[in-house]
Amino acid sequence: MYGLNGSDGLLSYPLYEGRGNHDGGNSTDTMPHPVASLIVARNQARLAQPSTFSLTNVSATGLHYSWRWPLSQALPASCAAHFFMLNEYSGHLCDG
Image 1 (cartoon, rainbow, N blue to C red):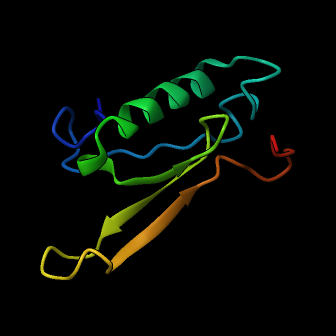
Image 2 (cartoon, rainbow, N blue to C red):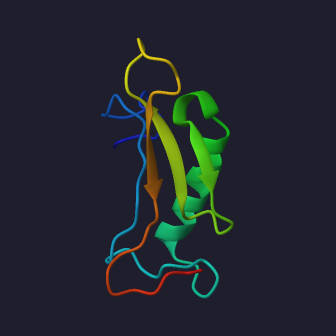
């Protein structure tokens, strides 16, 4: 429905999803969960499209990532917001 890259769904912007407390465990090591596995796969797809997603880092587990979002086409590339998707939620232990 929402797509991934901003041209394959209803949104006109790339999608950067995160998990919440209803999406299962926070690690792919102890319990492969469908949502976690999908995020890992989608992060691999994002890495393959650097001009669309501008990922700056992906964790060893493939679950946590960061990206740069340009503030304006008129500004230099260095003028961008830097976002971090930690996929953590209150009341749960992090996966390292």
